[in-house]
Image 1 (cartoon, rainbow, N blue to C red):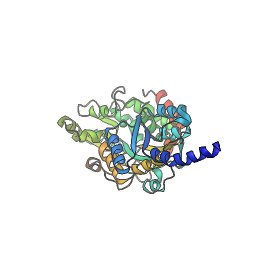
Image 2: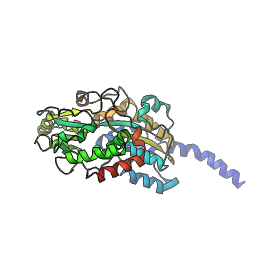
Image 3: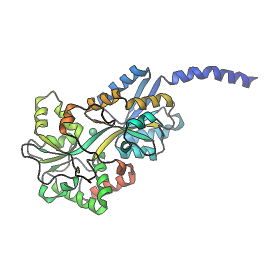
Image 4: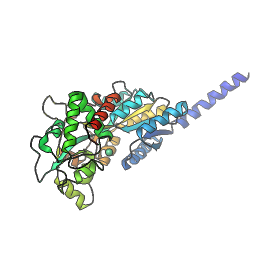
Length: 340
Ligand code: FE2
Protein backbone atom coordinates (compact mmCIF):
# COMPACT_ATOMS: atom_id res chain seq x y z
CA UNK A 1 0.00 0.00 0.00
CA UNK A 2 2.70 2.34 1.07
CA UNK A 3 4.73 1.25 -1.92
CA UNK A 4 1.92 1.96 -4.36
CA UNK A 5 1.45 5.36 -2.77
CA UNK A 6 5.11 6.21 -3.27
CA UNK A 7 4.98 5.10 -6.88
CA UNK A 8 1.99 7.33 -7.50
CA UNK A 9 3.85 10.21 -5.97
CA UNK A 10 6.83 9.50 -8.15
CA UNK A 11 4.70 9.55 -11.28
CA UNK A 12 3.18 12.86 -10.30
CA UNK A 13 6.51 14.36 -9.32
CA UNK A 14 8.47 13.22 -12.37
CA UNK A 15 7.12 15.62 -15.02
CA UNK A 16 7.49 18.58 -12.69
CA UNK A 17 11.07 17.65 -11.84
CA UNK A 18 11.91 17.03 -15.49
CA UNK A 19 10.65 20.40 -16.69
CA UNK A 20 12.40 22.18 -13.81
CA UNK A 21 15.60 20.33 -14.70
CA UNK A 22 15.52 21.58 -18.26
CA UNK A 23 15.54 25.18 -17.08
CA UNK A 24 19.24 25.36 -16.39
CA UNK A 25 22.61 24.12 -17.51
CA UNK A 26 25.80 24.32 -15.45
CA UNK A 27 28.87 25.06 -17.53
CA UNK A 28 32.30 24.44 -16.00
CA UNK A 29 34.53 26.55 -18.19
CA UNK A 30 38.20 27.42 -18.36
CA UNK A 31 37.47 30.12 -20.93
CA UNK A 32 37.47 33.61 -19.49
CA UNK A 33 36.31 35.91 -22.27
CA UNK A 34 33.63 38.61 -22.10
CA UNK A 35 32.00 37.25 -25.25
CA UNK A 36 31.16 34.00 -23.49
CA UNK A 37 28.69 35.84 -21.23
CA UNK A 38 27.01 37.15 -24.40
CA UNK A 39 26.89 33.59 -25.68
CA UNK A 40 25.13 32.31 -22.56
CA UNK A 41 22.60 35.14 -22.69
CA UNK A 42 21.84 34.45 -26.35
CA UNK A 43 21.31 30.76 -25.55
CA UNK A 44 18.91 31.65 -22.74
CA UNK A 45 16.99 33.99 -25.05
CA UNK A 46 16.71 31.25 -27.67
CA UNK A 47 15.73 28.40 -25.35
CA UNK A 48 14.63 29.76 -21.96
CA UNK A 49 17.37 27.63 -20.36
CA UNK A 50 19.44 29.50 -17.81
CA UNK A 51 23.24 29.11 -17.92
CA UNK A 52 25.30 29.04 -14.75
CA UNK A 53 28.98 29.36 -15.59
CA UNK A 54 31.60 28.20 -13.10
CA UNK A 55 35.02 29.46 -14.18
CA UNK A 56 38.35 27.98 -13.24
CA UNK A 57 41.59 26.41 -14.37
CA UNK A 58 40.87 23.41 -16.63
CA UNK A 59 42.67 20.78 -14.59
CA UNK A 60 41.17 22.13 -11.35
CA UNK A 61 37.68 21.96 -12.86
CA UNK A 62 38.30 18.34 -13.86
CA UNK A 63 39.49 17.54 -10.32
CA UNK A 64 36.43 19.30 -8.92
CA UNK A 65 34.06 17.28 -11.10
CA UNK A 66 35.87 14.10 -10.00
CA UNK A 67 35.62 14.97 -6.32
CA UNK A 68 31.97 16.02 -6.61
CA UNK A 69 31.32 12.60 -8.10
CA UNK A 70 27.71 11.59 -8.79
CA UNK A 71 26.48 14.78 -7.09
CA UNK A 72 28.39 17.13 -9.37
CA UNK A 73 26.21 19.94 -10.73
CA UNK A 74 28.46 20.09 -13.82
CA UNK A 75 26.69 19.51 -17.13
CA UNK A 76 29.14 20.85 -19.71
CA UNK A 77 32.94 21.12 -19.60
CA UNK A 78 34.67 23.74 -21.76
CA UNK A 79 38.35 24.48 -22.07
CA UNK A 80 41.04 25.66 -24.42
CA UNK A 81 43.71 23.17 -25.55
CA UNK A 82 43.12 19.74 -27.08
CA UNK A 83 45.50 18.09 -24.60
CA UNK A 84 43.44 19.37 -21.67
CA UNK A 85 40.28 18.06 -23.35
CA UNK A 86 42.05 14.71 -23.77
CA UNK A 87 43.05 14.78 -20.09
CA UNK A 88 39.40 15.37 -19.13
CA UNK A 89 38.44 12.40 -21.28
CA UNK A 90 41.17 10.24 -19.69
CA UNK A 91 39.98 11.33 -16.23
CA UNK A 92 36.64 9.76 -17.11
CA UNK A 93 34.51 12.84 -16.50
CA UNK A 94 32.94 12.97 -19.98
CA UNK A 95 30.41 10.88 -21.89
CA UNK A 96 29.67 10.74 -25.62
CA UNK A 97 27.65 13.82 -26.57
CA UNK A 98 25.92 11.87 -29.35
CA UNK A 99 24.71 14.82 -31.40
CA UNK A 100 24.53 14.19 -35.17
CA UNK A 101 23.96 17.94 -35.68
CA UNK A 102 27.35 18.69 -34.09
CA UNK A 103 29.12 16.01 -36.12
CA UNK A 104 27.53 17.34 -39.30
CA UNK A 105 28.84 20.86 -38.69
CA UNK A 106 32.25 20.39 -37.05
CA UNK A 107 34.86 18.74 -39.33
CA UNK A 108 36.09 15.33 -38.15
CA UNK A 109 39.62 16.70 -37.63
CA UNK A 110 38.25 19.05 -34.95
CA UNK A 111 36.37 16.37 -33.02
CA UNK A 112 37.41 13.66 -30.60
CA UNK A 113 37.23 10.34 -32.51
CA UNK A 114 35.57 8.83 -29.40
CA UNK A 115 32.80 11.43 -29.59
CA UNK A 116 33.49 12.89 -26.13
CA UNK A 117 34.30 16.47 -27.14
CA UNK A 118 34.46 18.78 -30.14
CA UNK A 119 36.06 22.10 -30.99
CA UNK A 120 34.04 25.31 -30.88
CA UNK A 121 36.74 27.65 -32.18
CA UNK A 122 40.41 27.64 -33.10
CA UNK A 123 43.36 30.02 -33.17
CA UNK A 124 46.49 29.73 -35.25
CA UNK A 125 49.87 29.75 -33.45
CA UNK A 126 51.80 31.81 -35.94
CA UNK A 127 55.13 33.51 -36.52
CA UNK A 128 55.08 37.31 -36.54
CA UNK A 129 57.67 39.72 -37.93
CA UNK A 130 58.32 43.42 -38.49
CA UNK A 131 56.75 44.46 -41.79
CA UNK A 132 59.16 47.39 -42.02
CA UNK A 133 62.13 44.98 -42.00
CA UNK A 134 60.32 42.54 -44.27
CA UNK A 135 59.72 38.80 -43.89
CA UNK A 136 62.78 37.02 -42.40
CA UNK A 137 64.31 35.08 -45.31
CA UNK A 138 63.99 31.32 -45.04
CA UNK A 139 61.38 31.36 -42.30
CA UNK A 140 58.44 29.29 -43.49
CA UNK A 141 58.26 26.44 -40.96
CA UNK A 142 58.31 26.14 -37.16
CA UNK A 143 61.44 24.06 -37.64
CA UNK A 144 63.21 27.11 -39.19
CA UNK A 145 62.95 28.98 -35.87
CA UNK A 146 65.91 26.89 -34.67
CA UNK A 147 68.15 28.05 -37.53
CA UNK A 148 71.27 29.91 -36.25
CA UNK A 149 70.59 32.68 -38.79
CA UNK A 150 67.87 33.93 -36.38
CA UNK A 151 70.23 34.18 -33.38
CA UNK A 152 69.06 36.77 -30.85
CA UNK A 153 65.88 37.58 -32.79
CA UNK A 154 63.04 35.50 -31.37
CA UNK A 155 60.61 36.45 -28.61
CA UNK A 156 58.36 33.78 -27.15
CA UNK A 157 56.73 33.17 -23.79
CA UNK A 158 57.83 30.52 -21.26
CA UNK A 159 58.02 26.90 -22.38
CA UNK A 160 55.57 25.63 -19.77
CA UNK A 161 52.61 27.60 -21.08
CA UNK A 162 50.06 25.20 -22.65
CA UNK A 163 50.30 27.04 -26.01
CA UNK A 164 54.02 26.25 -26.24
CA UNK A 165 53.63 22.76 -24.81
CA UNK A 166 51.05 22.07 -27.54
CA UNK A 167 53.36 23.43 -30.24
CA UNK A 168 56.25 21.26 -29.02
CA UNK A 169 53.89 18.28 -28.80
CA UNK A 170 53.08 18.61 -32.48
CA UNK A 171 56.81 18.99 -33.28
CA UNK A 172 57.48 15.84 -31.23
CA UNK A 173 54.89 13.88 -33.20
CA UNK A 174 56.31 15.16 -36.51
CA UNK A 175 60.08 15.21 -35.87
CA UNK A 176 60.68 12.74 -33.02
CA UNK A 177 62.45 13.17 -29.70
CA UNK A 178 65.95 14.01 -31.01
CA UNK A 179 64.52 16.40 -33.60
CA UNK A 180 62.42 18.16 -30.97
CA UNK A 181 65.33 18.49 -28.59
CA UNK A 182 67.51 19.99 -31.33
CA UNK A 183 64.66 22.32 -32.25
CA UNK A 184 64.06 23.47 -28.66
CA UNK A 185 67.83 24.05 -28.18
CA UNK A 186 67.92 26.08 -31.37
CA UNK A 187 64.93 28.20 -30.37
CA UNK A 188 66.37 28.76 -26.88
CA UNK A 189 69.68 29.83 -28.44
CA UNK A 190 67.86 32.24 -30.78
CA UNK A 191 65.91 34.07 -28.07
CA UNK A 192 66.24 37.85 -28.00
CA UNK A 193 65.58 37.86 -24.24
CA UNK A 194 64.57 35.44 -21.49
CA UNK A 195 60.92 34.41 -21.90
CA UNK A 196 58.60 36.89 -20.19
CA UNK A 197 54.96 37.95 -20.40
CA UNK A 198 52.15 36.57 -22.51
CA UNK A 199 51.71 36.20 -26.26
CA UNK A 200 50.85 39.90 -26.74
CA UNK A 201 54.07 41.00 -25.06
CA UNK A 202 56.09 39.11 -27.66
CA UNK A 203 54.85 40.95 -30.75
CA UNK A 204 54.47 44.24 -28.90
CA UNK A 205 58.28 44.21 -28.58
CA UNK A 206 58.72 44.07 -32.36
CA UNK A 207 58.23 47.78 -33.27
CA UNK A 208 60.90 48.86 -30.73
CA UNK A 209 63.35 46.44 -32.33
CA UNK A 210 63.72 44.32 -29.20
CA UNK A 211 62.40 41.30 -31.07
CA UNK A 212 62.55 40.68 -34.80
CA UNK A 213 60.40 37.56 -34.68
CA UNK A 214 57.59 36.63 -32.28
CA UNK A 215 55.46 33.56 -31.70
CA UNK A 216 51.84 34.28 -30.80
CA UNK A 217 48.29 33.12 -31.30
CA UNK A 218 46.35 34.97 -33.98
CA UNK A 219 43.54 36.26 -31.77
CA UNK A 220 45.89 38.39 -29.66
CA UNK A 221 47.02 40.26 -32.75
CA UNK A 222 43.41 40.52 -33.88
CA UNK A 223 42.45 42.18 -30.59
CA UNK A 224 45.26 44.72 -30.95
CA UNK A 225 44.13 45.47 -34.51
CA UNK A 226 40.59 46.05 -33.32
CA UNK A 227 41.59 48.25 -30.39
CA UNK A 228 40.25 51.80 -29.98
CA UNK A 229 43.76 53.01 -29.13
CA UNK A 230 45.83 54.44 -31.98
CA UNK A 231 49.07 53.04 -30.44
CA UNK A 232 47.61 49.53 -30.62
CA UNK A 233 46.57 49.91 -34.22
CA UNK A 234 50.05 51.25 -35.05
CA UNK A 235 51.55 48.06 -33.56
CA UNK A 236 49.10 46.00 -35.58
CA UNK A 237 50.13 47.79 -38.79
CA UNK A 238 53.79 46.93 -38.16
CA UNK A 239 53.24 43.21 -37.70
CA UNK A 240 53.37 40.69 -40.52
CA UNK A 241 52.07 37.14 -40.10
CA UNK A 242 53.59 33.90 -41.38
CA UNK A 243 51.34 30.84 -41.34
CA UNK A 244 53.99 28.12 -40.97
CA UNK A 245 54.27 24.68 -42.61
CA UNK A 246 51.93 25.46 -45.50
CA UNK A 247 53.86 23.85 -48.37
CA UNK A 248 52.17 20.98 -50.20
CA UNK A 249 52.67 17.80 -48.16
CA UNK A 250 53.62 19.72 -44.99
CA UNK A 251 51.48 19.28 -41.89
CA UNK A 252 49.88 22.75 -41.71
CA UNK A 253 49.82 25.55 -39.17
CA UNK A 254 49.54 24.57 -35.54
CA UNK A 255 46.21 25.47 -33.96
CA UNK A 256 44.79 25.71 -30.47
CA UNK A 257 41.16 24.76 -30.10
CA UNK A 258 38.50 25.64 -27.58
CA UNK A 259 36.27 22.64 -27.07
CA UNK A 260 33.29 21.37 -25.16
CA UNK A 261 32.04 18.04 -23.86
CA UNK A 262 29.11 16.55 -21.97
CA UNK A 263 29.92 15.67 -18.35
CA UNK A 264 29.31 12.01 -17.52
CA UNK A 265 27.22 12.79 -14.44
CA UNK A 266 25.36 15.77 -16.00
CA UNK A 267 22.15 16.31 -13.99
CA UNK A 268 20.64 18.30 -16.87
CA UNK A 269 21.86 16.17 -19.76
CA UNK A 270 19.07 17.13 -22.12
CA UNK A 271 19.54 20.86 -21.57
CA UNK A 272 23.31 20.32 -21.83
CA UNK A 273 22.88 18.66 -25.23
CA UNK A 274 20.80 21.60 -26.41
CA UNK A 275 23.57 23.91 -25.22
CA UNK A 276 26.26 21.87 -27.00
CA UNK A 277 24.23 21.89 -30.18
CA UNK A 278 23.76 25.62 -29.81
CA UNK A 279 27.54 26.15 -29.62
CA UNK A 280 27.90 25.15 -33.26
CA UNK A 281 24.87 27.13 -34.46
CA UNK A 282 25.43 30.07 -36.80
CA UNK A 283 24.48 32.47 -34.03
CA UNK A 284 26.88 31.03 -31.42
CA UNK A 285 29.73 30.69 -33.90
CA UNK A 286 29.26 34.33 -34.86
CA UNK A 287 29.26 35.50 -31.24
CA UNK A 288 32.38 33.57 -30.25
CA UNK A 289 34.38 33.96 -33.42
CA UNK A 290 33.66 37.64 -34.03
CA UNK A 291 33.68 38.62 -30.36
CA UNK A 292 36.99 37.01 -29.48
CA UNK A 293 38.71 37.16 -32.89
CA UNK A 294 38.90 33.38 -33.17
CA UNK A 295 38.37 31.14 -36.17
CA UNK A 296 35.01 29.38 -36.10
CA UNK A 297 35.12 25.58 -35.96
CA UNK A 298 32.18 25.43 -38.37
CA UNK A 299 33.38 25.97 -41.95
CA UNK A 300 31.84 29.00 -43.59
CA UNK A 301 30.81 30.68 -40.32
CA UNK A 302 31.66 34.41 -40.30
CA UNK A 303 35.12 35.66 -39.39
CA UNK A 304 36.28 39.09 -38.35
CA UNK A 305 37.60 41.08 -41.38
CA UNK A 306 40.94 41.43 -39.56
CA UNK A 307 41.35 37.64 -39.56
CA UNK A 308 40.19 37.44 -43.16
CA UNK A 309 42.88 40.02 -44.06
CA UNK A 310 45.57 37.94 -42.30
CA UNK A 311 45.00 35.35 -44.98
CA UNK A 312 43.86 31.77 -45.36
CA UNK A 313 45.82 28.82 -44.04
CA UNK A 314 45.65 25.08 -43.78
CA UNK A 315 45.47 24.02 -40.12
CA UNK A 316 47.36 21.07 -38.72
CA UNK A 317 45.40 18.09 -37.38
CA UNK A 318 44.97 18.12 -33.59
CA UNK A 319 45.46 14.35 -33.46
CA UNK A 320 48.99 14.58 -32.00
CA UNK A 321 47.68 16.73 -29.12
CA UNK A 322 45.24 14.09 -27.91
CA UNK A 323 48.06 12.29 -26.08
CA UNK A 324 48.73 13.80 -22.62
CA UNK A 325 51.83 11.62 -22.20
CA UNK A 326 53.34 13.05 -25.39
CA UNK A 327 52.60 16.57 -24.12
CA UNK A 328 54.37 15.83 -20.82
CA UNK A 329 57.38 14.52 -22.74
CA UNK A 330 57.40 17.63 -24.97
CA UNK A 331 57.55 19.89 -21.91
CA UNK A 332 60.42 17.87 -20.44
CA UNK A 333 62.34 18.16 -23.69
CA UNK A 334 61.87 21.95 -23.86
CA UNK A 335 63.01 22.38 -20.29
CA UNK A 336 66.10 20.22 -20.58
CA UNK A 337 66.94 22.08 -23.80
CA UNK A 338 67.16 25.29 -21.79
CA UNK A 339 63.94 26.95 -22.95
CA UNK A 340 62.76 28.43 -19.66
FE1 FE2 B 1 44.95 32.94 -24.68
